[in-house]
Image 1: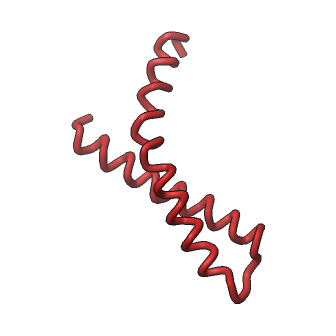
Image 2 (image 1 turned 120 degrees about the vertical axis):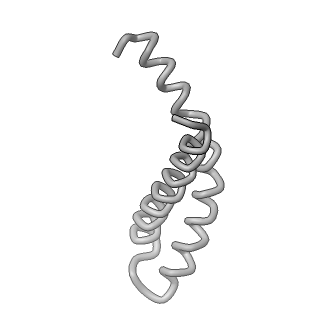
Image 3 (image 1 turned 90 degrees about the vertical axis):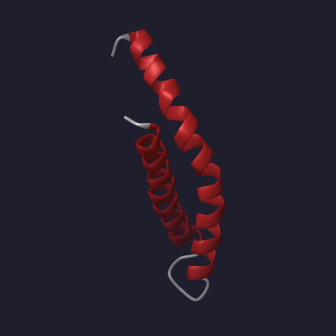
Length: 71
């Protein structure tokens, strides 16, 4: 994989995972209603900022661990 593909993959994973998780948490905590959209979008923004660095740094560590464990 080229560096461009790795960056694009990490960026897409961060967007999709943060959208799904913030949607689930907003539905659980706020429920569908008047404040849902605001809660979801603010939760997504925070989730995206947290997940973006993790989507770049965690996969290589997991790959190294898998190679070490020969999985």
